[in-house]
Image (tube, rainbow, N blue to C red; front, side, top):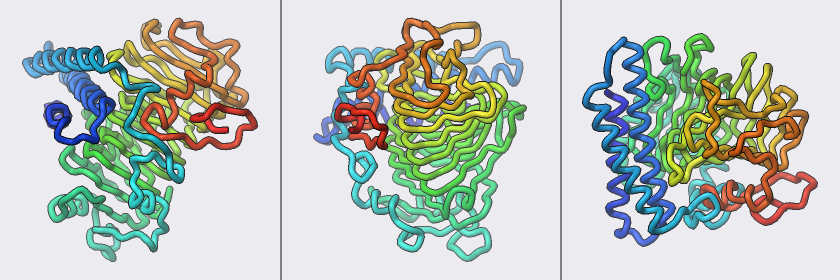
Length: 429
């Protein structure tokens, strides 16, 4: 019930954005499609949380709230379909929100935000400083977030600097708390640890060590851990439902469901992500760039993308990353009917199974999914023995791949490392 109320609050924010879109001439069709896509994802997530509670408590039915969520889902889905039928799909490949990339960040990362992301520790001007030893303004991160929310207003970034140390906290940043910036002293130095998990009674949504819904969230130089362990099943380290979120030089550590890219537009750069089962999942429009992805179990599934409608402008794009594993590793499996994931210009080590991808429980692989690979390298990159699903594309053309770059997919150009291969604009070269 609590999950549904939090998700409903965000849905109301998204629908309000849609209703008031003409008040701001800078809003685009892509914005509206993003808001409606997120609102639909919220209701799907509510129903999933209710189902988890039914199973956990041995209940016979989901109750009235499930019926309400289903009805609202249908209303939002119809609205999204009507909007797309009138204005056309904006992505991938048709986004107009972001136009270029500046210093390796999308253009919606403002000049002041880029300076913040590039700044050294001594250059950061923080509104609050967290230190376990009492040398800051607060001793817990949750205290700092509450204080900043209560004392600061406006559109500027609300910067919280977290000194080195291990902080055993579960953090929530709600939809109405926008522009929160968490800055640490580096991977492995500033560490936030939680252990909530489904096995011990949490929902997947609520298991997150850090859960963010407020737009404009930035995290830099922080390690976020869910320490529940592999036997506890779903246990999220970071959940992001923030629009235009940036995760830069962080480490996300868990097992099943480590990174929950819930909804809206997200950008990850130089971030380490470890896990076992479906450890990058959700239904946002997300690009992970220059990241290290490590599969740490005997049998691993990297992604489980959750797109439920062909009209949602969502998917997972993994570009110029390293995917390595300890055991047999699959790049992903189709969590929902319109699951969409691409791997571009990335290094795949020998742990990647020759089939590459794995069907969902029960052997399903709907023809409506979209999985693709483009110009990958490494011993696991050969596509000669990949799955033969109708929705799998073993060798995307440059034009097809370009639709999933930062420029086209979440809006902005893309920086690519030297690969020795000539690419069309948008894919480097």
